[in-house]
Image: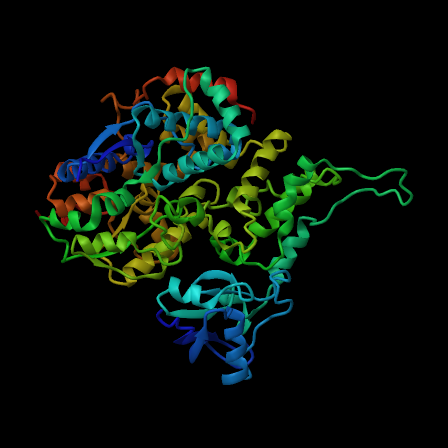
Length: 295
Length: 332
């Protein structure tokens, strides 16, 4: 296998409140021999909110990010479901609407850029599965996760709308997703089967509809805990932030304890590959999580 | 040539419940040979005709146009009369359960009480509001572009698939839900209509309006007519700003406020978006979480100096600043 090389769109959270996401992603790539070039020019994707204020502007800014992956001639990989969705929505809109593409490129030309549509956009989870291969991941496991019941939490923006994502996510069935489950299997962990795995965490209405947000996150945490999960894992740092940071207030709304470590997908892989404690960064979690590091 | 197997022997599970006699719902199993051209509606007919005459469901047109037979199979919204059974058996490894669109609204088996759907749909005035001259001197003309603006949203058959897939609505019963929003959009952008501002005001209200959408895309996934209701929700958001109807509140500031950090750093300013959206008085709600984030290191300072330069800057930040300046079309 020739060396895989990707352009990494980090997103905002990996650069701010979840540094452990970035360090574990880079550690996993390093262990697996995947070359990563960070797109330091890439800006915020708008996080599914900016387009509510100004849809055209959101397309222009997302197209600019993609331009930098195109310049490198690389697939753009994401480590956040919402970055993935927003980038993919802009790509789809521009690739299917020549008039919009021309209007966006007219703006991009002012800063010397042109969106061409030559780079694919893929979440890191699916590059591990489709391009690196789970068998190859399995070969690199140093610390099998066989002692852990792991609840996969897929996050909406990697699996819906399925038509938009199907080429990038291996035709994942949004009503019965399997990718994270199979990754957990490859790391010799025990995937927890629970109904909430493909449901919404409520992150996006944290401010304006706090009760809705807390109940949705609470439902998922309770479901995972009641199915004997030792931890939850998610490919989306926004799901992580909602379900890790707010467990106290969620617990009050749900009227019960909802304490559960919520790991980023690359942190889980990093645990199994024997990355260092610092790279995995379990100290950055609000609920207790450091006990998961056993190497 | 190998023989093509036309049927598959499977066990179909179905949600059973009679609100008049049953304390709790239960699942019953029905064994049958399913043919390659059979639809979910055919399976429901066979349960009723061959197994149990009391099995109840709605059906009418059998052409995917009346919306009566919308149910869920393993959580996936389907129109029973359009959905091929083998396709679903393949999707779910031959293990399928027929369920009503909303279990908590079940009246009898697949039949649900849909009154909340109809009330919300009616509330947004899903019709053209116009003073029509009874003796018009000329036709009311619409260009193809104007017509195309609402063409896809006009395909809605009020089946409720999106409405009963929406998690926001399950938690917050005031929320209008995706079907009502798609209809609000459809009539608001119709050039013959004059109630657009009223609908935009109605759908801008906290709790009931578009700002409580959780962005899960369940509605886009559920719609059998590919209307993509969340796309219409985004358009309603934008129309609120375009027509000056959006008022400054926590939700609108949250959407607009992304630009504040992006202009300074290229990234979102995570702390500023909370303070700016909530206002200085509202921010107290987040102090508990902020303290925990600080303790765990989730809030930290890029520069190493507390409260100063907490965020890194992207490369070529001037490009983002310039693009915002020349591309921004809406204002709060």
